[in-house]
Image (cartoon, rainbow, N blue to C red; front, side, top):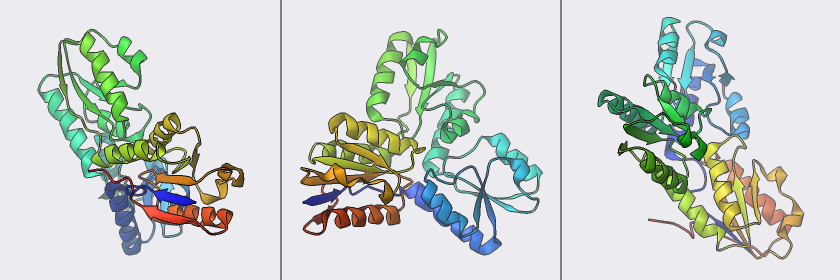
Length: 291
């Protein structure tokens, strides 16, 4: 029996940075408030609460003279303005890659391009990007493309975790309707690598386990990619969800994890599998590294 763990599984650089910034702020200031979930992983959110990082859903919940951390997804500028008006100290943990998308959207608008964001309209990253321009259009699926006004030209950015295959499909469909397009492929490199590793690993093993929050966009996309290529794919948040019946007639097990999945959860999953298999397994890490 062999367990193969994708090299990229777990925290991406931006998420790790946000978590470290939040912990440092909590050590310095006591309670720190996160406007929305700092990362999309319920188990890690609970751990962070024990360290003094409290999730709130509204600016009105934040006491005056307190500290707020802006999560890696970023927020619209009006949120920053309201926080400052309330005299709240801000720790901005917006991922630099997300900030770059916000800046690209602004530059497209200044150049006279209507701005189109490819991604999930309810995702905080997309909401944050949209807040930086006046009248953005958000495309989630091909039906949205059919509903677009008759633009002569269009500037395009995309959510960092967009499926790369979906980006190609969207651009092909948009090019049939719009004469002039300016596209910034803003899918994060870590996302591209993680998705490519998942495609490769899913075809090399008998079963795939994808670890991450059920509310995590990038984890959901990894699971969709894996399930398409390997029907024995399972999306779990924690080791407790693993069912012993999954391992019948299985020789190779692949594991990957979303960008908001901490290493300690990945290790718990590995140990749970070892317990079920009762020894005799080997663990390989990074077998599917891509360049």
